[in-house]
Length: 149
Image (cartoon, rainbow, N blue to C red; front, side, top):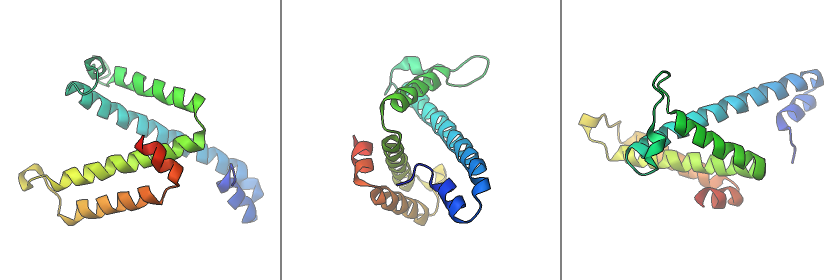
């Protein structure tokens, strides 16, 4: 169990001088992924708030920047609390399971679309659903239990 498997792989490949650059690259990639996830969840929060499935105050869109600023702040606050209070590896597993479950539901929902609504070929949501479920259940058990909670 390594805390820096990419840097360890670079060292094992005989290029230890590249390890710091790999660490920086991994951190930038992780930050980019986290930012995309926060923005995606914020948009989902906005849509759910508009449908009154979450508090309607989260449905606000900034008048100048046209972004769901309250939803972004709420999601960002949840991320900060989780990062400060939860084992990061557990949070990554939880996040992975949650994202895969989210996309599994999206693929299942795509099956219900009509051709007029832009339904993809039937095989696309089937492969997507099966792939998401296979990946989700390949995660460690702790990730699945945390993700289902």
